[in-house]
Amino acid sequence: MYTDTRLTLFICWYCDESRENEESAVDTYSLRKALDYLGVLLLKPKSNTPLMSRQFGQHSTLHRIRTSSDQSECTVAAIEVLANGNIIVADTNNSKLKLFTGQFDFLDETSLPGKPVDMCFNQNKVYFCCSYIKKIFWLEFAEGMFSQACRSFDTRLQPISVSKFESSVLVLFSSADYDGNEAGVVNIELRKGNGAILSQITYDSSDPHMQYIEHAKRIHVTPSSEILMAQTME
Image 1 (tube, rainbow, N blue to C red):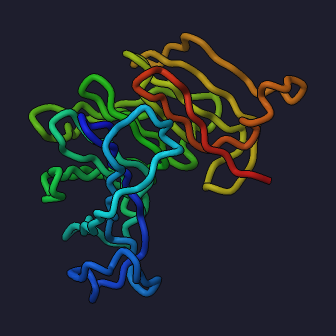
Image 2: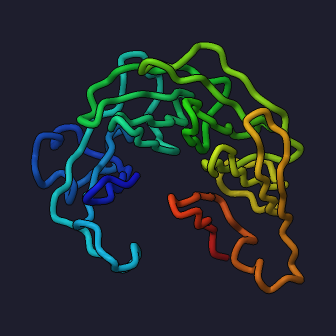
């Protein structure tokens, strides 16, 4: 999600629709309406300061992501910013991928075989995993549109997060059937696009270097190939 001068962070919240045109909407959000908006915060221009030590800028906006065919509240599980500035959003509740311009004008959407919990974009393919389905799915993405043919490869454990790693896909698994709450044994695999395993790591409670990934729920690879994980603290 890097640009030449700043990093864009996407924050999801419940917003009172009656306030969508007010500048103060980002500070006066309401739980009374569906999660049909994305909030966008811009960090201050890049510097040598570590990412987690930087300050947020003052500019923020709200963008509606609900489409005419949605049957449920929108719940955003993942976001990908493409090289041309377009944005892919994974909507869990509506089991969809949605494509928007950088200004959040709607372009395209496609229905998925399950409820997505994470997504990544790599070499004109959108990879995603769904709750309670032990598969990694992918869709071709060409000429600014999603293909209708969804392909997949099977996995032994439940995939809960995916991230691009060079020409491959890094997958975070859990031994528990994932709905966002269960804990399980963490497993990390580097997979080719066809599903072949290149490398894998399994959580070992006796290894002190692995103590911070026991409850990992998200994995992300930075442009400098650093692997970041988010976990649930017990």
